[in-house]
Image (tube, rainbow, N blue to C red):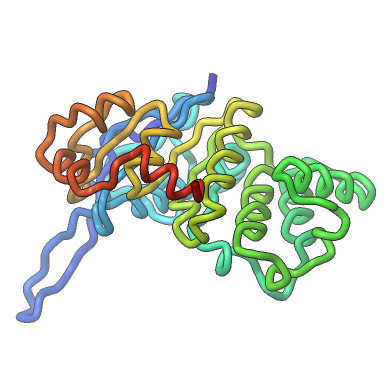
Length: 270
């Protein structure tokens, strides 16, 4: 079993006020959680709560001010072979499929590059087969036709499926999904979420699902972490957190959210 751990992680930014006074803004403050392979954990909270900062820290795009990020019990190294190994194992599905794919390159290029960089395929024939397999895994067919297209020739849902395929190319053990359906039409969101759930089961992935949508967090997650002002204020099994919230902030989120069953029906278009 693989584990990805946040241990007492804090991320503070230095800020300067109008009168030249300096201070610190704590985007993430003493956060602890563990993501295990085969489990889906939802990180929920409103905009500005610190969710995206956690994603950046996990991707090594930001460095913690204090605390540690550990993969399988070992602190993550920021350079060399240790960082490459970490990036084999931890991959990201970004929020915006329109911006996360380079419009100048074909779908095949987007998938072939990580296959080659991470040593998952060698030689043109093996890479071509790997691209085809990845597209088939995310239910994009015919694979050869899709591979030849450029991102602007695909729908938003198809682009997000390509982004998911690209994340799968290094054969990760952990997947960070940052609001993966918020930029998509309501009618196709459930299909993307169901695909992520299927892949999680097939590959025994650990999935961190970052969202503001409590209904999907409850439906697709084993555990929910509620984030408020940079801190985890409540955590527990998904049903317990949604149906019996303890923290005042969680209660307000739950009260403001649509009925979970109705919300899922809206997403499914029924």
